[in-house]
Amino acid sequence: MAGWQILSIVVAGLVLFVVLEMMRRRKLREKYAGVWLLVAVGVVVLAVIPQAASFLAKITGVQTPSNFVFLLAGVVLALVALHLSTEVGHLEEEVRTSVEEIALLRCELDDSKRALETRIAELEARTSAPDDVNGLPEVSHARVR
Image (tube, rainbow, N blue to C red; front, side):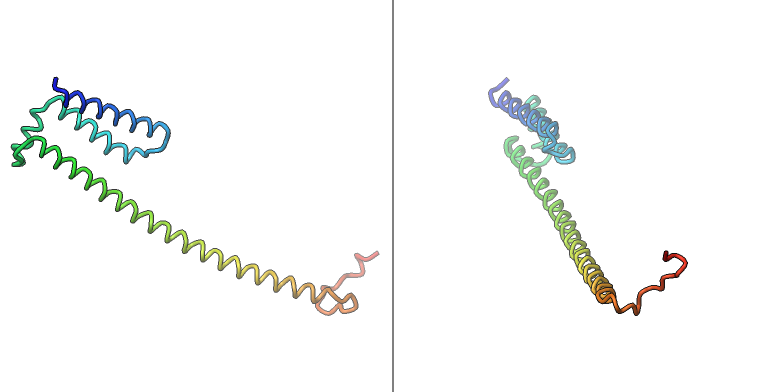
């Protein structure tokens, strides 16, 4: 086995180990880990079976297998970037919606505070002078002893 094949297998094994360890520690979600696991398995396959890269290069019209591998790597990276861009777009939308909801809730809270302060002020105004009983509920004499 050639040196580059051994290096490819070692690097792919290292990628597999790091991805699995990050998943175990909950630092990498499964939907993102799948892409990296697939890339690592693909690298192992191309390292173990170098004729596969030659065959795929001939099918796609690429002159050398190494150029095909570089093309494949570029496509994978472009797809990862596209996927992450869509995720960022979704997250921005969620953040915007959450901020709008928080702003509406703050407005409702401020309105409720103002209404409560107004009611408290009205009740304090009614009960501030003990001589003034206008507006207070009637007390039945049967209950007073």
